[in-house]
Length: 402
Image (cartoon, rainbow, N blue to C red; front, side, top):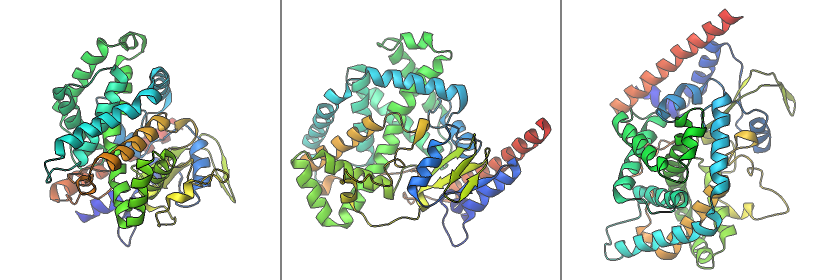
């Protein structure tokens, strides 16, 4: 069942994933364009449409996120209500004043705990919990309880597993998370939103997906990449520590952006064009599905944070890292600051040998956990065959409507 892994990660001499995408498109009766170079044109393509379409997000991500809704995955009126609700919450947060102190205190406390335990490290789980702890306190103005933190972390693993097409998530743990979050929101300052939303689950999902689950997944993925790149070139690691000690957040942000450019937590971005789009010498008609495989993007593979520091010349990937247009990451400023403050505090307070975000890092958006086995390949194969069947049914439905 090695083919299932090749579809998932686009590996091997024969690009099976591209062929799979084109087969799904043929079954659905849609045109497909795959863009894997020129980040500026890719950003234009992303900005040209607010519709994800009927492929990866619809077939894989939306079912994986159940019982929650994901702002990243939904389309149409549901996406708009999710986005509007999330923007409302973000506008009410005073995160610029509080985030740095919360993150610094959390990492100092963790550093004290592991100071006399040389075998203990800041691993993937610790990174996820730090992100969760900080965002929870920003939202609810109180520290998360140890029991809730453990439940919310375990839930992120179950969602991570299913979103990355690595196995079936535990529905019971997901349900426990959703019910617990409901009880927290219903007695918080956000309780009125449960009555105001057309679907209370939309309001609950605004807290569950972009603030609780996705940051645990994405921040740990990005920290794995960041420290891997820094350790490949020791001069960058030493410079990063010097910049952290001097609180040069601009340079630390450049490190984060360069890490995301080279190893984005989302392997593929997609849009369905709702109007014709001219990209250089190519005209793409409305209805075309665009895919941007960020894990196979044709780009300079060298790690160079300095390229992000020229204010006079914007980096060509500036509008690709967090997306562009109406579907760009709504919390990109908050997410950027959270990761920069985490990187700063880790470099300042934790010994280098004990910063190990890749340790226990599993079920990521990339094939970097070394856990691919028969059961996982079998699960992927079933999901991909199901995607072909669903694409076939979509195509039949489209033909009948015509």
